[in-house]
Length: 161
Ligand SMILES: Cc1cc2nc3c(=O)[nH]c(=O)nc-3n(C[C@H](O)[C@H](O)[C@H](O)COP(=O)(O)O)c2cc1C
Image (tube, rainbow, N blue to C red; front, side):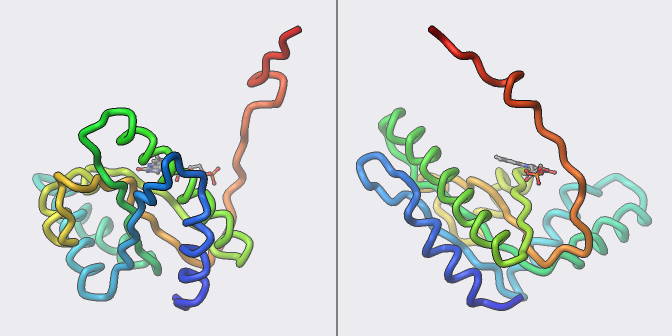
């Protein structure tokens, strides 16, 4: 995957609204070696005790994903600051995803078990007392764009007098 759109996207991400300007985000771009280790870890988590065929198909599906990055949010001993940091990181993630989509690159935000696994924190050298993984994001140029649905405006909106 080209690096330039990702750099631009991260620069856009940082303009997310952010109470107290804590700038709580950190982005980890996964190079080949870390990506391979991550795929191995996810495969282990998902397929231990399952069939060999399932292991092979899981690994194959992960191997096909071109781009990988992880976003973390800074922790805080203050419960509200921690929550608002996470909220700001979610806004940053959306900025980033919208930017990339504008470049024709689709992104999937994932929060599977690996994102809470100590081995993943260790692999990425993330101190879990300092930061929390907000998501593992996969990106790439889509071969096809799935049809998606959302509830209608009226279903999700209440107009008060
Ligand atoms: C916080 C968060 C966590 C998510 N985790 C997962 C996940 O682990 N697995 C998954 O298939 N989709 C996950 N999604 C949803 C997808 O990223 C995506 O938004 C969803 O499939 C709907 O697609 P669309 O946004 O293109 O309509 C998550 C979304 C958010 C916001």
